[in-house]
Image 1 (cartoon, helix red, strand yellow):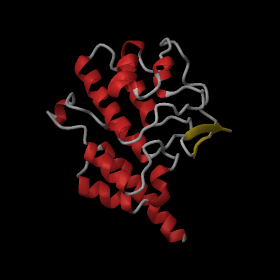
Image 2: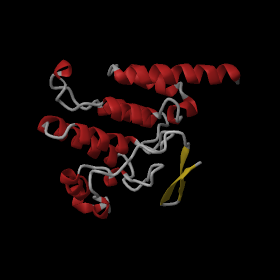
Image 3: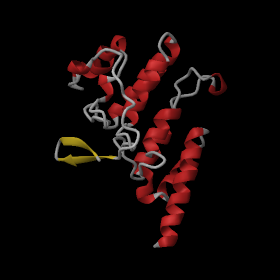
Length: 193
């Protein structure tokens, strides 16, 4: 069991690196299949969060015209990754995308690519209503100019239009707390301690 745990940890570390370099689908699938529960571990971060941190949709000159590599996300999800897994700060992949949207303000190609990534995550079950340790959902921290577009796609079914708040919300105050996301039926909640 110790050996299995070490193997899973090593596979998880290799998976994160494979995601950072946009490795092949076969490589990601192999590593994800050997991660076990580590694929959703908070340290260093869940695999879906790493994917959201690294995915680019056509704006990266090195990948010239590359897709979002959504097939990497699909491979991880097929091996047990959760699209709603959260970091220690309670941030999910959607929280990461909203932070990247803030940083990309003014760069239309990047913003459009990140919106595609957002919708790819949501279409695979990412929940826009999960709050982080600061009590903020991904739409709470989305740039106000994009918030309505993110929440209204698919006929407004994200049910989060009310979450569009000003940009000056502090989202960095709980670096030392640990959070977990729990589900009961259709309800999800974040608990920090």
